[in-house]
Image: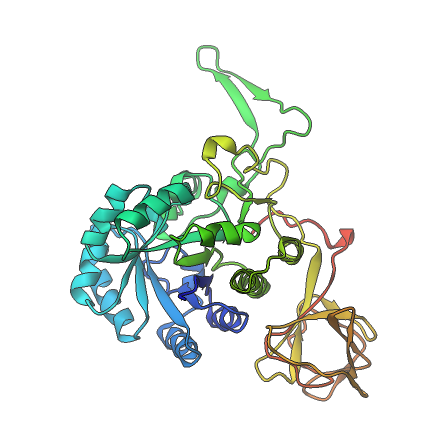
Length: 430
């Protein structure tokens, strides 16, 4: 049986490795040229991106390259060079958004499969057929489409792969076609530099052009001023329904600009949910508990399993981002011997360990610290904070760039986390 693919974001080399280690079958990302996430693309250069491709391939995973921006005429020569360069790195597919780029990529690198970006807004069989005839082997469906419509596309085009978003930020505009950021800050969303202006609070005014008067419209208490702020997509509780539809080949997680912890937790949760499905099990409560440890804008199951007119809970009018139930306090480096502080750490603090499934830990108690299991969870506590340079610290904060010795070797990219408290504050921006 061919299992549905889990596709995770790779905003940089570290997050690429984390997503793969935590269970992703494939990752997507790119360098800054012609990618709709210029910020994350700048964290890759050709060398590190090639290293990421090699890392994935060595583990039997795939890498899809994002070339999904909308180019100007003046950029076409650079685009051709970029497509050839990325093809030389031997990725597993290109993600493109326009018919012209689709045709060009097929001409320059006919051996690289082409995936059609969600920016192309495929909503029906007719459009899917056109892009399939042009060479697209997979469509990344518009977020506004339903499972019913996707089933019809699959029935008409059984060889066309279908990919859907199951988690991450939602754009208030139709399939991401937005100009607000362009108008307010000159950052063009469809060329990769969206400033997330829809996440800001706004005040509403009414103007009378005849008299020159201006009135502020005051919102009712509790309505809020985040009038364009969409909640985050979360379909972890609908995995059985999605896979049972029989038309979905890949489940995609949004978030190349999100934190490494986000890359880890989303991959881990959706990997577990997918594996549970094929094992005849399901534990939505467990999935949601883990996803709620991350910062979020509130969650919605959006439109894939509901029609848009049936949904009235997709906006968050009160805030742009809130703390999750937990705060990340540290991450183990690739050696597995040291950790880096990401919040603050004191001797004798108890922190929960989060690591990729399949790793076996053993209890340890020595002069550095203690690792133990309790109620099915692993924890760590330090007796001394010994830096790699030999200095012992009485406390460590996130600005400290030293690496600190672990009581034992832990799986690389293990996270330390603690319950969040009110004094940690509410995050207002991504």
